[in-house]
Length: 228
Image (cartoon, rainbow, N blue to C red):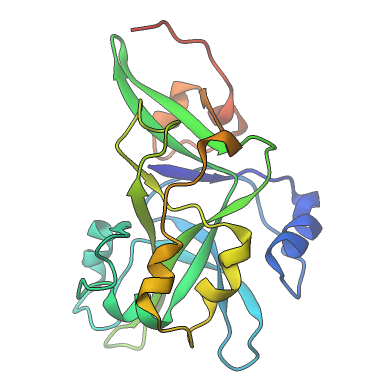
């Protein structure tokens, strides 16, 4: 999976209103955010209790990790088990975040190779994945903030492409998901469910997105594909 942040710069006010930010963000569009790259997340500042938007590395590095290489294997976490897994348990309890996006890619093998598909909201609005974040400090006081995206079973629109999908949170659940004082694991797990298919659309897009280093507007260009 890869994700996008393709809003125009002028939509910062909409993001601030949609996600309850005190400051209007100034974000560059991204059309192909790949694992290990920087991505935008929202977490709750413990001192001010306000939501903060920051860029963190995609691939969770637990604060107790010996080095950063573990992050390459922690880009996603299964929603069913993250609360109990040693790599994610601490973050699940108190360092939860919203991962901002406009959509995400998934691939399907076909007659001519892997075809990328873009999943997004039917109305084109920005939304948020359920994420976990952590802060790692190295021996020379190097600090890295990183995150992982929680995944769940595929919904009906995703099933023909893949059996898993990222957890898309409902806006009504944002406050509780972000609040580090909420410790009720069963309540938190109840948010981690497949998103309603009827609110989403899927489109085949330009295979240029297959290259992780390629990041340009034509990544989201809709294309025609032959039926298998």
